[in-house]
Image 1 (cartoon, rainbow, N blue to C red):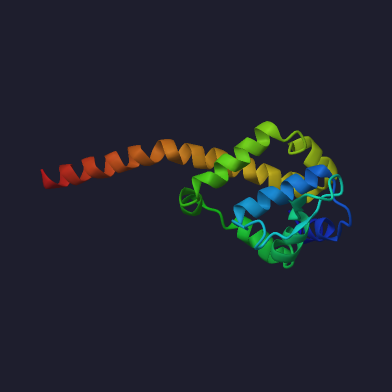
Image 2: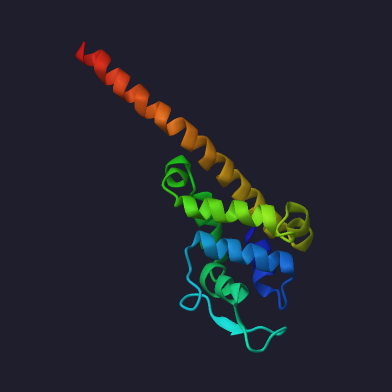
Length: 151
């Protein structure tokens, strides 16, 4: 992913539904709260209702420094993934199952960066799931090695 790709996303005037879903997923990653970090705006379909403006939040708080964003995403190594809040992973998985706009094809068609970020998220999910299976085995191995040293 290149900085120019993030700049393109940031410069988008009216994001499509796929991009809005991606921005929502990024807000989930950064643990932004609706009404606090994420502004609520009037829903065009129902003026009596307010909806979260994920695009504005993402553009202001995440994409304002594209290289920092890219470096942050690249910094997710095994230890950082292992420490992630499981609710982030479950919310992403729910979005992937239920949001018809949150797909690799639709995001890749919207922009190169959007497709890359989606791929990154799927890799994070797979790694997190694998670590949840491996961690208990690693702990058991450490205990067994400790017992062997004592014996």
